[in-house]
Length: 161
Image (cartoon, rainbow, N blue to C red):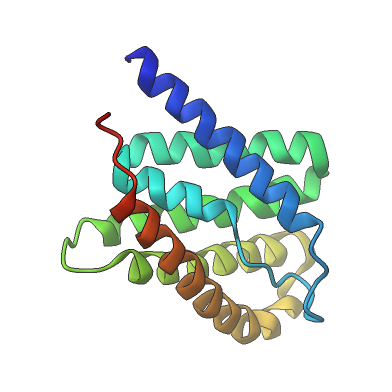
């Protein structure tokens, strides 16, 4: 792997961690668990500009490092479940070249929330499934916003320099 690519990936991991921290400082909109997913801007950018393997590495390292630095064991399990399912879906959907970053991001947002609910079922039981419709709606809304920002970056940032 070239030095420039390694440095770019390191910057992406650092930026994703910073965005995760910044987001953790934003008060909840009144609905527990609802967040924008700012770090996913970096993951989607990496998926489109660097490749799926790099996006997976950036996302998983971000989850691990943020959980170690700012979270706890439960947050790691929720985050890794959401990130893994979200990444898998976004990678598969991106292969359909006719779909936009926004569509890929919306799927990622919904699947992230689904992954977290599945982990909550494992850790707490089925009584949390009732919360899924709220999280699906928030995943769609956040996915549109994050996808729009990601699309802007993907189209405007040239990594060939």
